[in-house]
Image (cartoon, rainbow, N blue to C red; front, side, top):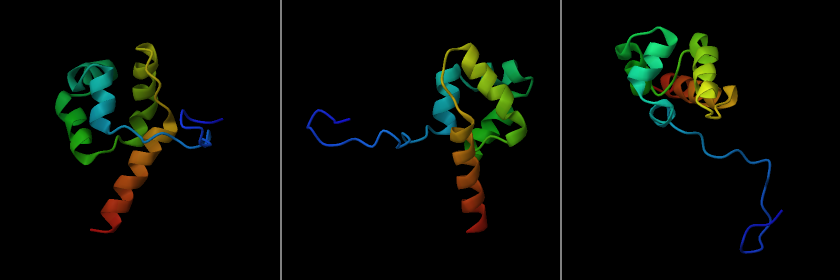
Length: 91
């Protein structure tokens, strides 16, 4: 596969992961997500500030995204989780 300039394209490369804030905005905002998963908006906003969603909520978050026809994979959530852990270890 080639791009418009005729250069080869790596079809296995993952696109850059959206931020947690971008994901929630696309899903309808933190208040909407909070209501859908049974958590407070303050809790969801804390995830945005921390730039990661706790793993125990991943299934619920992915289900809300799917219901809105938004693709969100566990790998994208894992990316945020790994980055957060890496940052915490380096502090």
